[in-house]
Amino acid sequence: MPGLVSARAGRVAPMELADLMRVAQEANAIDIALGIPQQGPPPSAVLAAVGALQDGRHQYAPPAGLPELRRMIAERAGPIRQWDINPDTEVTITCGATEAAMMALLATTDPGDEVVLLEPYFDVFPGMIELAGAVPKPVGLSQPGWRLDIARVEQAITPRTRAILVNSPNNPTGQVLRRDEVLRLVELCVRHDLVCIADEVYEQFLYHDSTHISPSAMASGRNRTIVVGSLSKSLRMTGWRLGYCIAQPELTAVLRSVHERTTVGTSHALQAGAAASLSEELYTGRALQHRRDAVTKRLADLGFDVTPPDGGWFVLAGTETLGFGATELARRLVSEIGVLVAPGTAFFTDRAEGERWIRVTFARDPGATDEALDRIGRFLSR
Ligand SMILES: Cc1ncc(COP(=O)(O)O)c(C=O)c1O
Image (cartoon, rainbow, N blue to C red):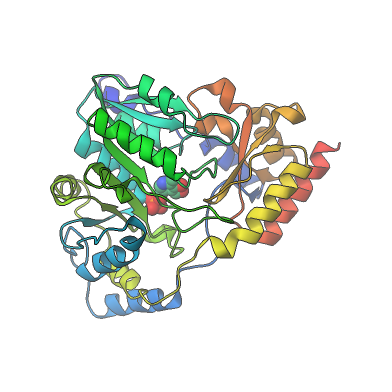
């Protein structure tokens, strides 16, 4: 539709998984591709959200978000960043982490600017950067273990680079940035005067002895980091669309200007519901550790090349050892045995590299996930 759509929007590719998901729905396939929690939010949050609707909270909430929800987030997010977060000037409630990341990109880039992101990446990121009018500059992580090669990141920086977008714990690799990597990243941002956009939606999901280190916890990182967070995972409410940005006051003021001109804020009653969960225990890696161990081992036993994830909800499993490309394997699994996995091509700009991996989640129903893995085992031994 030339002329009817912007070049910016026209450049954004359709979601890679959309076709496979259609086939999966028709085949009633078991979905181990998407990270969706099996249980709902804490009952206290649901009751409070219903109560908020009955009490008449039907009109706009304050655009920055309900003060009690901002206080809850500041209280929970502060200690791991060794920073007394001010809920009035440093926290903004958004429509999920998705809006928070988009706000961060719109607030920090001009058309034609470049954003460095680490590859493999959360599949939505390149399209978001393009929608902001900026240019994604992917930098591959290094094997073994999907580690950050800071020299390669530095090589990708040009006079047009404005931001580095990082996601730790990572979707899709499960990699968690170590303290030395975060330190070097922050030093790089300082040296080149860049913003660090840190997607930390899986900060509660850590396995064995891994620790989450935020660039915002570094003395020189605090003023140039925008933390992108979510309640989708830790409160199991992906459909409530509640996320947040944490950033120093001057950045927050600009983020809020963007927010007020895009969504004006997220649902009033659902924010009230989420805020009522302050005393509830969060959903964390403790609950998923066993599934992470079991699914990782099972995939390795089936012959996939697996780096055990240190965090998050996913394993990236190498298919080369099995003699399959990811696109072919994902298509055949969904159509022949009714199992949906995500082909790695969704997470790489380099398609050949993407063909070497599939992504599997261990956050879904254990029984269904085990059945899906049994089916994959039978398929591979045919
Ligand atoms: C890395 C990452 N960032 C952001 C999101 C989106 O989170 P939200 O539901 O809060 O928009 C997801 C969801 O899967 C994710 O994996």
